[in-house]
Length: 253
Image (cartoon, rainbow, N blue to C red; front, side, top):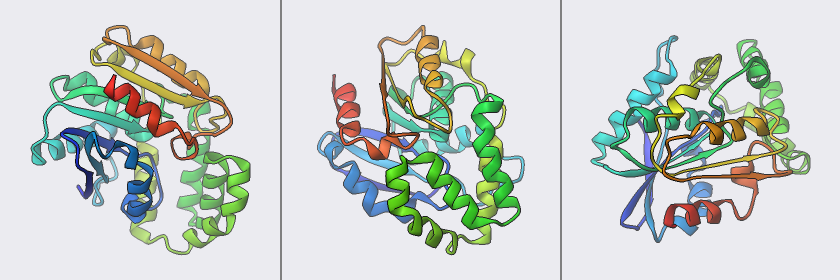
């Protein structure tokens, strides 16, 4: 797996990103800037997902690949931060490999992908299959971000559509389809590490109940915190100015 590393702290934080059309490595500089508040306390590893995957690539396959990568990097006792799709993977890792995960942060994710929670993702899959990439990028931006931000960045989303490679298109379809019918509610009850769940009341990919549902099922966790923003949308992790500070306070409590 590709990854990049930054920060100089003694503790290790592994970030698992959400579903995207382009690799997160394309936004490396922006991500480093966004997470600079965590750099003193943590050495941060942001993992990219496998590029060459088979059509049947599942969440469980992703879990195995991430755990293998953590072992390859020589990391033990990590703080794990999963966003959206990354949150689904992180929940499975924390339940199946408790010896690896010291603390868990889950952002804009769900433990149960119902038909309504998959609706937008399914629409994106169909756009990608029809190779309607501008429609895909515009719909993605409009759904994930607040309206004002989307209108400001609309031309950027149009431009992004022109840079998507055939490999990226196929990879997006595979990862997006792997999410359908995902359920790990029973796994949540096996998670024992301190866990922080964050979401937004205006999440138009999943919904606010998805965040609350996760927190309610963390019955074995040593400490559970849940926080809901309002008005930032699914991408609250990028949009809320105090988001990273909240994560830092939880991890350092």
